[in-house]
Image (cartoon, rainbow, N blue to C red):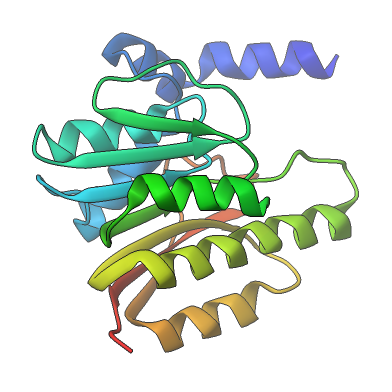
Length: 202
């Protein structure tokens, strides 16, 4: 029954239809597009890291907008088909060896860190929330280490335990922090995106 409901919802979803017509790998592309239309962080020639990239719709948008002189490095625990202009590592971001491999490939300060990471959902709300916040905190730590001064961090969060503390921490690291709920994000979802602009030089 749940599978049938999902298929019906997908068939009726205008963002799914639009993603197919434009060649994007998933409807999530429009979340990033809407965020960028409001906050203008995807620019030509930018160096970008995309965490939790599979199946690749955010990396597609990022590579398009960064252009030939830009650079996109993507990572996910799941496999991802190759994308033009995107360098991809498959591995678990939580593992030190994978993180070291990512850092070696990145090699220099970047302008933008994107994180659409989310854990596999178990259905146990407290556990799922704790794991999602752990991923967000690791992404924030990575962003603080690798963003150039003035850099931008975009991360998916879920309302719940640890959310308010995370936002407070982000506000100590960046000049401007905004919370966004794109129209392409389903209303019933607890997800919300934090856009942190202008990484402070410390």
